[in-house]
Image (cartoon, rainbow, N blue to C red; front, side):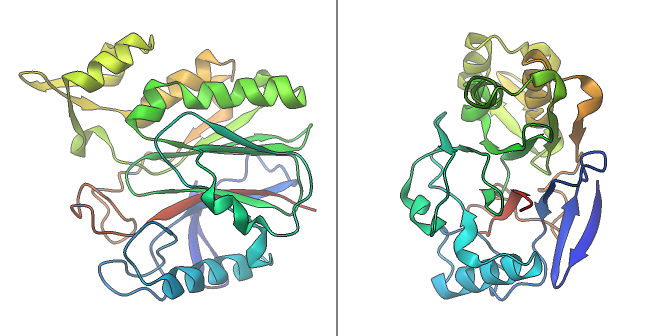
Length: 265
């Protein structure tokens, strides 16, 4: 992955091995209109930023990719494991803002789907042959509930996607260097069958450093994706203050970057 620019928008791009059927990536915090502490490309509708700033930032992003603003689909993320499936044209996608979900799957071209994050893991999935895309928001709860694996299963059952031919991109998120968790998180991962010792290291009594990106990579592999098809940004949003928002670093008062993907018309 590498930082690219589309008009005014700087984003971390992945080309999914040169597949021409989609555009996707992970935004940085640069080149928007929001003021501190949301400076500047805050794309999150649930922050305390002025709503007109967020709308302006989303407009800048959509204009950069030549898409109408009402073609952007984001949802109300609740750290759950529900999946929104869009398999028919929608004249105005903004009504999905009230839908509670943490993953979106679509086969509709020209519809940009996205998840907003500020520490959690944004994951993008693509079936270039069947022309199906997905965006997943996975914090520790979504990871423990195996949401990304459930999304792969939904793509297979609803659109006949073969997990062995899917491609995935795991975007910037909080890394183990900055992410300490406690016993309830360990228990949730253990209960879900994720091998705790392979994704976490001890950092004191009943404390661990958790690798959220690594845990989701494990889930993708267990869902049937081949290792070379999974790209990982390997960038810590908490460490890289100049590039990314971080909820933990900024003590809750911060913006949101977005993982986005769109099937080209």
